[in-house]
Image 1 (cartoon, rainbow, N blue to C red):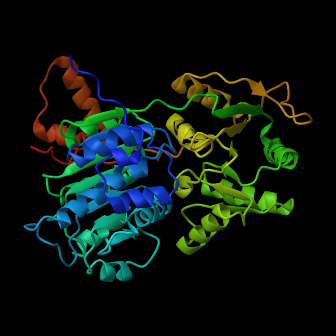
Image 2: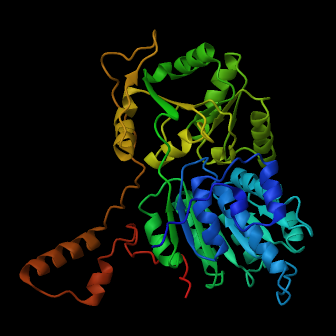
Length: 459
């Protein structure tokens, strides 16, 4: 009879060095989370890992601790070649500058007692590339990077991947979006095929599946169910579009949430809402991709240290906001896709604490929120704030001009050729190749399917 292996309940049950266990103790981690108990042993064995776990479940430590342990083991191997120059051993890809800084800070925290020092660096866009080229020449063990910037550095020969041991895709559900797809595909062509691949995500959209099939090799699949509805108290408030700012201000005045994170879907909306709240005397600031990097970092630090009461952010900019004591998250505008709703509300209710998530929607957004509920299999009661009830007659959806370009009118000769060909087709006359070529509309986009080059599986 074989008894089941008892679950890991203490960090000292992992095969981690004393320096790492000391760092964990200094971080005041009481016991490993579910994703950590399953991911750390698998990564230490060199296996590929696919982990789906909610925001705030300790995913960064789940791969950072075993990566640092692997580095220590490499150092202890006499035959192991020490990498030099601009070669790296571990690459962590993240979707935003804020998340790159957050992940690098956690690596620093876990490795601060390790000697000789482990070289951890982060690179991202929005800042000059030349300083990054210079410090990458000084032996980097672990590199945290955004896709566009690491590709730009690779094209300048500032970084080499010959000794790459592991690739981590953090928040892979974001990294598969169209804005990242091209640079990641180009980057994967430069990486060695023999490597360990680790994927971590809070949501699992359908598009991730093709990437998994092409990149992961017999992965250990970890699926931690989303936290219960009781941990995050979700509310939906309906109001007229023109009353949204007033409703938000009324809620802030009544409940005094601090700090408060407010989500908008566009950069313009972030700036406008920040201006509206500032005019009402509130300490509110907006961050998004158009803000200078230094300003974004300063605003985030002010928010984390209690110097800023209200932060208004787009989804991508908010990826670097990760701390336990965030009492409330408000969706001033709904996310474009349902999975982003989970990312947003997951900023509150972290580390087992209760959280509050409120969505303020107008009749124009009813259908969109219904789609979010259907996708997440939830149903939330519609509530209203006294004095800002929805009008009985819902507003009409405003007309939006189509962005599609009008097709060029055909010339008389070309129109005549098309009519003749249609007539020939009806009569069963075969078209020549030249006739087919002349029938192509030069304005219409090509319908050729793009070939995916995410990378090759390990063998």
